[in-house]
Image (cartoon, rainbow, N blue to C red; front, side, top):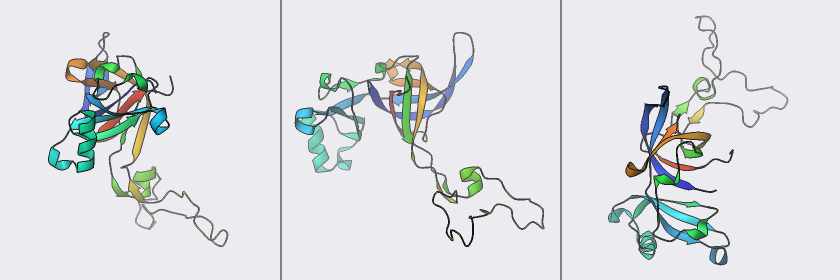
Length: 209
């Protein structure tokens, strides 16, 4: 991983490129993040950078975490994540990571927790087909066949059935950075990004480059 940053999804809008074409974009408040801790091979067995994002009130932080932030000399943060960056040794505790680490045209992977949909049936959850809607069919939106009866006398694992939909860690690969506004810590991403507005997202350089 060459570069990464934490951000907050603000919503979607649209911009125009130099040819006047409309581009739908997701607005992300990316950083500023601060380096809370450096992991080293000598001490931890691997190299990584632990970063914090989004200030938080003191009453919402327990004593161990408060001491962890004070040791690094940084303000209290709501979110902490770890990135195994190739140049992790070059970072220092207290150093800021801002939106300008990315530039327009960069390809990125973005991770977030998808919107929760609650308990849903197979038609919405798995895009299953419904039965005939006429009065006599008596089969409309039910699950349908579960499989063979006497053999194997069970429902196979991973059978698509009703259940909890959404609220899962989701990553969208190979998205494009449409524009960066460094003075406002804003990154505009072409297309959609997982999660609700105000949800935490992780932006990192793509693995498909």
